[in-house]
Amino acid sequence: MTPPQTTSAYACAPEGADTAFGRQFWLLTSGSAVRLIALYMVVPFQVLAVTSGLGVSTGTTGLIMGVAILASLPVQLLGGAAIDRFGRIPALVVSVLGGLALYEGLAFAGSLWQVAAVVFIEAAVGQSLFFTAQNAMTADLVAPRHRAAGYGIGRVALYSALVIGPLLTGWLLGAGLSLRGTFALAGLVSLGFVPFLVALRETRPPGAAHASSHLRQTLRGYAAVLADRRFLKLALVTMLPLYAFAQVFNVYPALLRLQLGIGPATWSWLVAVFAATAAVLQYPAVRRFEARSARLGLAVGAALLGTGLGGAALLPAGPATVAMLVAAAAGVVLVIPLAQTAVSELAPASLRGRYMGAFSFVYVGGFALGPAIGGLVIDRFGGTVAAVLLIVTGIVAACLYLWVAPQGPSAAADEATAAELEALINRELAGVPAASPQEETG
Image (cartoon, rainbow, N blue to C red; front, side, top):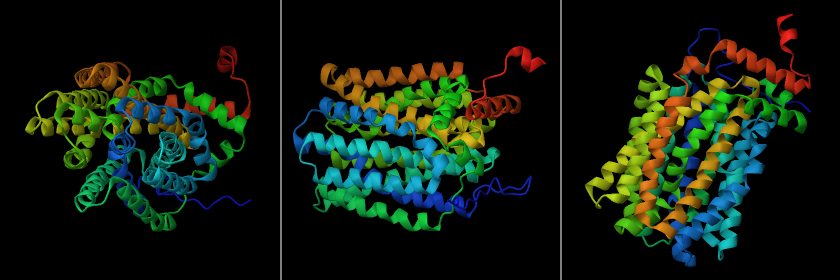
């Protein structure tokens, strides 16, 4: 079988050429924005729809969604390897189908098990596969020195979609459409990604398909990823701010409804303010900390995210709510792209999909813990305890980032370390035992 034709603005460019943000990058970013508009017409309102439509508590809904997401993690384990073997674009196509399952499933679900089923499908082959493929494709297309900015632009597109999607939902609700009707319409919006997929060209590095040809080799590739202690430390700490951030799309609107009496219409405007702030701050904030200290940027971002979300739920409704959400948005724009950049720079090109897949595994794990634990805390201990826990999570993550995060791009991209890891991975893929110290020194 002839492998799909690939292209990479970064890999194919003349040495020294500045090929960042070419036509293919902008096609990917624009198409992703369309897909994400559909996603954010639904996700920030899904818990409100289930709790009001099916009469289920916030804790039960959050737990069901969290467990469904966790159950999908074994499927996602092979997602990065599949992206390396079959290509980025097939993964993006499958992710569109996973999103459709969620939107239409929530629109017509009549019981909690049906909600759990579509959440499982979307978590397994929808959003996670989409972000993994998008991240890998961005790294393929953008030179290393521009990757933080490239991921930052991707986040601008994401937050722009997070402005438009909820506002569309709020407008449709005001026009008399139900939440279920809005979810069904989101499925049609998501199909707007298809023309961009047709125009995109595959970017998978040639060596990636060879490295992914057998399941045993796939698992060995992941073993090599897990042998990278810098990656493990960074990924595990990143689960803490993700726990807080995930609640924005699940139980957090229920927390604000409990604490401040905020309903779906007001929430659509608040989440739009959150996203607009993130879109405006994303590029300049990442550029500033990319040039200075990724470690400091990650720490500041985690602290702002946790204290902002927790503070918004503790302070009286009004300007303070908006101010705290603006602070939380400023935190998000630092944590996620800086962490993504560090992971991409740790990854050899032939295993970039698996590094991003492993990071997405952790990403989705944080998104499972957010609704599962956050919802239970709200039900068992009340909204105030849940808000304080968000603040504590952000502060703890900030302290840990100062300990484990790389100082900057140069630390993550150290050539000697990268070459050593590449050799280890190649030996693992070939089934050759690691050399003993005597053999290494001759």
